[in-house]
Image 1 (spheres, rainbow, N blue to C red):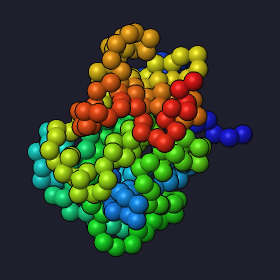
Image 2: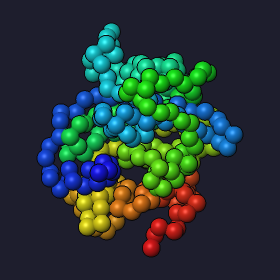
Image 3: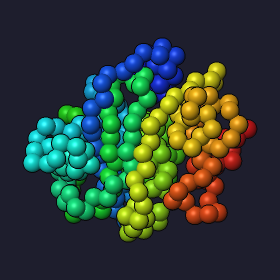
Length: 262
């Protein structure tokens, strides 16, 4: 019997309403390069027997005690930066310089998630060198354009978590590494604290700025900032986006974006 998809687990956890584990600090880094057809990011497939098993993720993991050594106890961004560098080297063999990583966003999972990671996302230009994986924690690696990764997820070829999907969506709006890093340098990293609402046809992730976020009610009228996970092709809907051009739509910029609205 096939393992349930991540969105199915989210819906089940939300219906059960049990509190998850105490959250632990974590960090991940989106390694970027300019490919033949534009910006690409390195993605890894996790071993199916560990947290986020079988899913495609960016290099990263939990913040260890050693990552805090010599740093102020309250400086979680500095701890995460060190952890992201260490995890990138352990999982990919690539050595990223800490000062070259730009804070991208911070994610707090819903309280109902069994294993909770408070995760800083960084972005950095990928260093030179070949990607090497250990076939232990990581079973596969691939450079993907953000748009291709979204399309592959919607086609059921790969599985990602909502923070990964939203990060890919944002990356899809930048044509090359320099443009992406310049835009990230010029803004304050956005913080996302996810709430999951469940309708008859599936779960919806709600974030700040959505009219239904405070009460966890997706039916309330007003602004939208949410991810619909109730169809094969996920749909990210945002009324206003802080880093988007003024004429940009507030939904996933897929070539078939209008095809799944019926």
